[in-house]
Length: 446
Ligand SMILES: [Zn+2]
Image 1 (tube, rainbow, N blue to C red):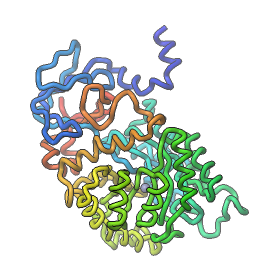
Image 2 (cartoon, rainbow, N blue to C red; image 1 turned 180 degrees about the horizontal axis):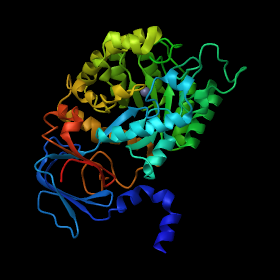
Image 3 (tube, rainbow, N blue to C red; image 1 turned 90 degrees about the horizontal axis):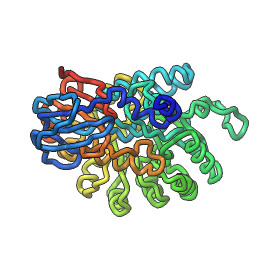
Image 4 (cartoon, protein in one colour; image 1 turned 135 degrees about the vertical axis):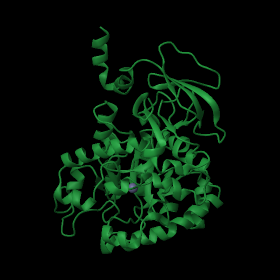
């Protein structure tokens, strides 16, 4: 009877079922807990995990029948990392994927990269556009290994916007052309005017997006839209926001410049991605509107020669302009005491670059403390992702914190990352145990 029920419910309880295969509780002893929020660790603590959730956290001894005990040896136990802006399906150069491979190849490669991302300590990510919905399902059903994914589905772009990857002579689908391959592969939708934006938003929601990604200003990897461009009229942006809100979720926008940021905020967007070219005008607007900023600084580590080789003559100068704005942006976010800053890396198109995902921790040290950066990569990014509201796929408990009832997404780290977040850069050496949903995916302990 129980088996039949489990079978019948298998679609909805697949996540829990993964954890329940090893149904004994796990008791971490002798750990110092960074709970995702407080700078002061809970010293010499014990943490009990039952199934896929944290059951108890205490500095007193805990007892649990049949529990498997893991002696943390004085390491730090912290929530799994969250990257709020990745592209799981774009792990190789965009033009190469478009011209030479089919969706099967994309799926195979991104599955391999998803497992590597989990093993870098990232137990949850928000996918900021691309065909990651199937990957999310495969991972949640225990068929593939990787982080939890909040997928945005295909990015929504105006014609000649940042989601425009047709080759020059390829016709427009609404004039004389067939669907571009990236439409069919759910990387991007071209939509112009309110009705088309509404249709694209609703189609992304139909596919399974948990929030909607809109390209609202010039981008680097796209070659037809200069960085100074503002993309989408106010009414088009508002249409996307309203359609998303009707489903209980929100819009995130790709933007760099002030005009795009201001227009997006006015339209009701609550997650501002990148924004490296912002000035004080945007800093004040972001502060006043109390919206999220999701910047990335891993670009600071890339030299001009590498950029020229990787991006070519059209995109390389754009990259360098964005790179030049990054430090100024970081300083402003700090000076304006903007609290809603999420952790993100936005590394796309290169499996080697992806191995440097954790370098983001060291770049942020230029203005933020280790503690602030850890908050960004745990409880704060979790707060942002939870804004997907009724479409949130992970609702059994909070993510990004260590507290009773929270998901058992945990890392055991050598040393104290609250004082030295750079420990996480060398994830292979310093992250000794990785647990997601109560299941251990890496352990160097006995
Ligand atoms: Zn992106």
